[in-house]
Length: 94
Image 1 (cartoon, rainbow, N blue to C red):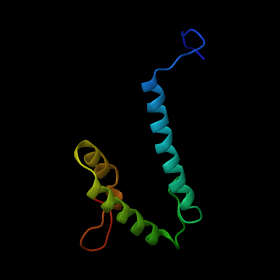
Image 2: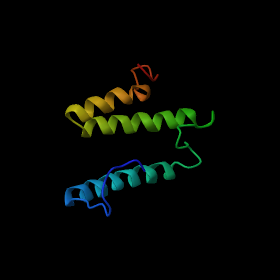
Image 3: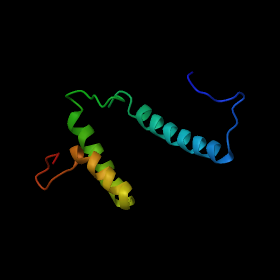
């Protein structure tokens, strides 16, 4: 594999906890996308018929996320979700 590490590899308790936390986050994201099956694909594709409804859903998720986040996490989330930002005219993007 290209690593110069003796086997067996041993992990610290912190390494294991970080792995478990990251795995839970990945599973939550997978569950979210699985719940959208038939509406929005994991790659973001949606049909013309469901496009407006999907954009409304993501705009709502964005607004809820921004309410719950602070600091760098909020700043990063705001930056990456501008495409789903509603303006006063009901249009999206920035």
